[in-house]
Amino acid sequence: MKFSCVATLISTIVGSSAAFSPSLFDGARTHSSQLNARKPFISGNWKLNPQTKAEAVTLASDIASKITDSTPDVDVALFVPYVFIETAMDASGEKLMIGAEGVCPEINGAFTGAVSTSMLNSVGVKWALAGHSERRVIFGENDEYINGQCLKLIEEGMAVMLCIGESEAEYEQKLAGAVCAVQLKKGLAGISKEDLDRVVIAYEPVWAIGTGKVATPETAQNVHSKCRAILADMYDQEAADAMRILYGGSVSPESVDELMSQTDIDGALVGGASLDSEKFGRIINFQAV
Ligand code: PEP
Image (cartoon, rainbow, N blue to C red; front, side, top):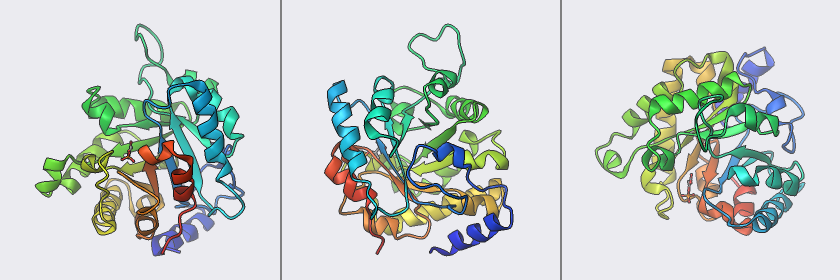
């Protein structure tokens, strides 16, 4: 077990306020106690896929079938298009947590095309993504909007996977840590330490998303440990040690084992490979080296 995991485990046993809320994980496979801090978290992001309900049913049930008794003790979530949420929930038979790819920070009113936290909550959704680079870049969602999403999800009693990460130019200028610091501080503004049990961070360097250019385990570990230090500065060491920080960006069956062996990498957010049940199944069943 990774050292900081042990520290978190001990603090959980003695009554840490940062223990995970089991209620958010009711749909997943093994959540028998709160002694699961920094439990690995493998998640998929379907983006604008698949194209039909029938394909969504097949994909969700095929992925669920990869979770067996020999699967590591891991949380597994799929972030899917709104229209497939209930379909994916039914097809995966509660083996997977089904989340939304985004949410509107407003609760009601004249926001054509938007979906609110209460709408999602009412159909059993507990998780949503915020801050994915495609939403930031293509849809113009800025840090203030993303912070609104995070706050609204927390207020609704739900959980958020906040995505952060630098562009290729920023990476080349060695600004990864600085960019992550800004996105963490702005994204989590107003979220208390007590609510951090419903926050997961996904570090996704933009240059690695959908490009096949996965960050090396060393590069990813380096940024993850910086992110943990930033969180310690924003909150405290206990909160930082309890926070799950996932890596995202071209994760594949070939790269997952080494990534998951890094001290500060607690899981993966997977795009392309989550559309292939064989590949995603292998990622869920990673073998830390
Ligand atoms: C993503 O969409 O968050 C992602 C990491 O995509 P991919 O795995 O395809 O790079």
